[in-house]
Length: 360
Image (tube, rainbow, N blue to C red; front, side, top):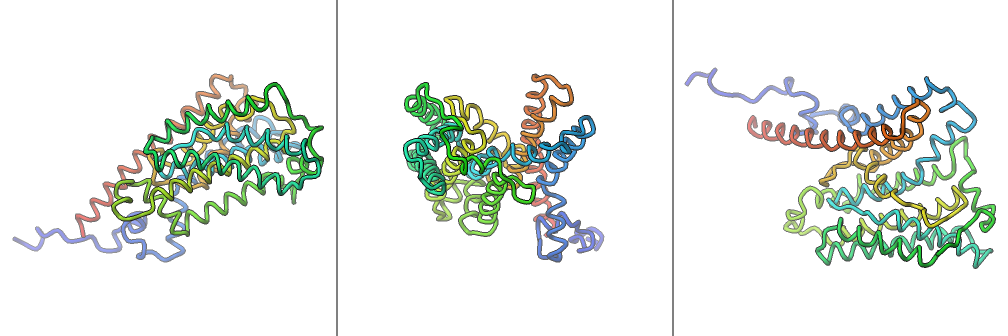
């Protein structure tokens, strides 16, 4: 056999930055590795789509961003959905889903109003903490049934969606919370800005940063990805699967509880229709933002950008003269495209890993 018949590994110079990042990230300098990661990220692609939508809408209607309320609405409107999408992303990363977040949000939105009516002098921080706690308890119910009951999350959370909504309707009846029932200081959470950024948006971004940092750096966060990638392997490896699933659902419920309180501050009114259908928007925001519906990949940063994109599209398309049907069709196409792209990228990554092992 001649030397030319022997297959040699490719020299380092012939290995692309993408392959080195995938197989041997230590080959790249920290700066180049970070730059390559950003350029190849799904989040950047979604962000560029968001920018394109904003530019197109602003070209058609200059007031979309540059009016008195244009920039404020662009930042403020997605804040509630952003909180729900962050919690939903964490659950989806574990290969589950939480369909009860809209009903949890409705319950805590009404709870917020009742607390201020029954105890007018109650501190705002206490109300927010109470909503977080109630949401966490409702999320704990979901987590216990999924982690310890062995029932698929889709079934469990679909059931609790109706149960929590039924509790809210029974409790509220035909009652309605109005702005006059709420203290002015609380309502200012939905109207006040700091350096041109709405306070509600700042609160949502702080939550995003905390959860994103935890997923990226903490052992528990990385274990959530491992569980979503292969639940059976995670069990065999000895990961605390049940505890992590429980924590994911508790976090999703807590953020939905906080979203309910902030919804009341944002709009000043609470009726029985609060949160109807928003759970599907939260799932859509996470999936469009690159969180794999099959679990194991994605980031809360992408889910946040997906929330901004969804809300911006719903606001931009009417200004472009596009009918309601096509608005919904565009969102549906984005969801389908995100899922198809996720499967294509997953298969391509698996193929590159296999080829790299063959060459080594």
